[in-house]
Image (cartoon, rainbow, N blue to C red; front, side, top):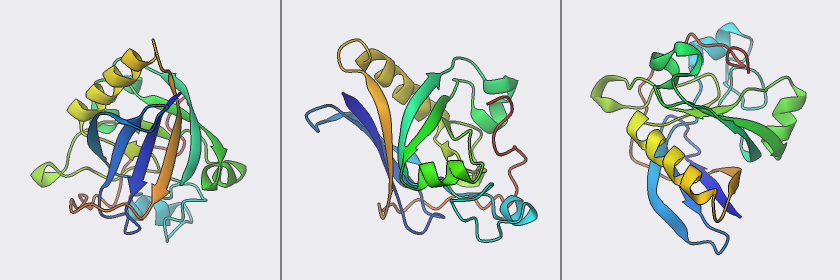
Length: 181
């Protein structure tokens, strides 16, 4: 089976890389930019001033997830927060993702959304944000692979590298978990 692998920088204010690899370990398609950084003021306002990934409103938890659902169209009609192309709904399986779930963290998504100034990825309340066009390319790739080599696992690691800073939107305005997850 193929899987999505996300390498996030230990400094979460810097973007990370997302790629799809097949069951032989070969990369499929292109790599994509992804951000797993929480909006700091939202995290602090909800009792998580350090944006600890194990608690609500924190950074995206590392670990393994299964892909629960891939939706179409704007999630809850909110293109600003989630983009126009749907979302990947994730279920935690192991690692910090599973630990965070025991603390009430559910509703982790992969999605697009409006960019900040200078086309920088905006922070979320714990999801993985991508550029809208790259999210659509990822979604298409995953759906095409589902015929011959289904993609049903996502692995998130820290210590990846990237030079792309995120836009410091200290508030996100979305819930954790997202509406109706």
